Length: 103
Figure 1: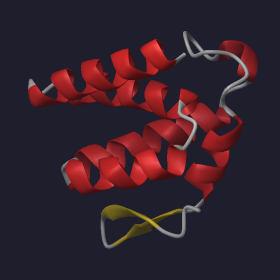
Figure 2 (figure 1 turned 90 degrees about the vertical axis):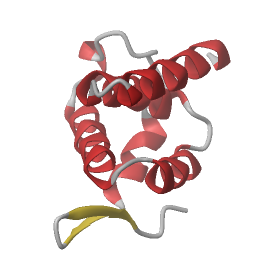
Figure 3 (figure 1 turned 180 degrees about the vertical axis):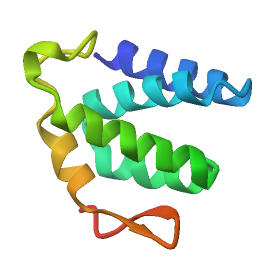
Figure 4 (figure 1 turned 135 degrees about the vertical axis):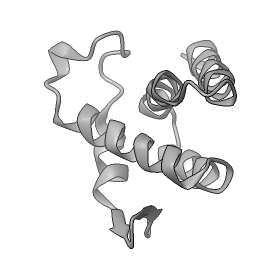
């Protein structure tokens, strides 16, 4: 799982740097799903990503939270429980996403 996590972070960062925000966000979301500390990772990503890309990531996480487990489309099964807790604490304020009290 750790190798998968690193691979998804690196691929996400590379794609975002190339301007492929949608694919990059998909890979970062996969990394968050398998991360042992998703709230901390979201905090780091919030401070390092452009606001619109972070907002795309939050939307993607909400989409993951609304999917049935059997249709996780490539995500590692059984690792999604803490993701819902992270997404539930995210607020939209004045057009940009912020993380509020994640832990």
